[in-house]
Length: 372
Image 1 (spheres, one colour):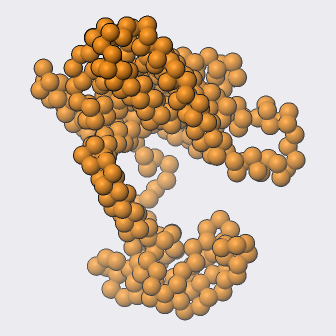
Image 2 (cartoon, one colour; image 1 turned 60 degrees about the vertical axis):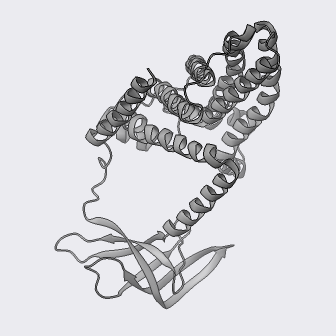
Image 3 (cartoon, helix red, strand yellow; image 1 turned 90 degrees about the vertical axis):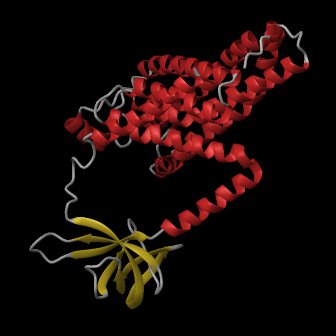
């Protein structure tokens, strides 16, 4: 049976790949055929006309000599690096950068500095992170990375293309959370009772969360057109039929998924330990123990999610204050309605997850019902 399930799970991942590979999405609004991004090294700064307008923000220009990667770039190129408040990438000799090369046929090519080449520092940081994870977590740490990679694969190869091409965002968000939960729990815990409880609890919590989202969004008159990037999203919707209604819930689901899985595993594993220590523990006592643990967990998780969403909108709040926006205007703004909805719904998912996990765990573990 386990072998059949493993084959099915592998086939699902393969099917997701073919779905992603056959999806015609992206590149619908801008023609990038003549534009490439090329790695380059700054050989010399020929002229430097920059000034520090703000701390660590330079404006002006630089004329630089760069060595581009690639067979067709046989000679060093001179590039004028424009520094502005919107895009400021000051460079020194020896810096590695990414150059935007616009090379249309029959027209003189145009080169600009896109940004610093961060690929090697990112790889180095990732290696240090993986090393630390292995030293502390050993095998379980490596399995957690595998589970994370599978979840990222599902999000980027299934959920995002499907939503982009017009699938229901709420349906895809719930389906993605279920699939991610299936793969991550099986990778981390195998075919155990803990995996069953986690899958059932997370699925139930996100189904309830979807209902709460629909209720709150209708109550606050949120249709998806109040998001900050709605203009760009509308252009995509015109081309692909993407549904803006429900996109907010996708953000909620992705943000709350990790915390939800953490809450579910923490409660169910603790109740399993209690049941093993006290085989005579009945379902009611286990349920109440799970509720007590859940209350303690909720206190920190609510703060975590709330301040995460608040941090994302902090710059906009500062701009509101600079314009002298009053409390009544802020309270009734689209920004507050969107952030409030995301915070409330994500927190509600965690809250309902506590009794759901406690109940399911008590049903499995109560009166020696520990099934592996």
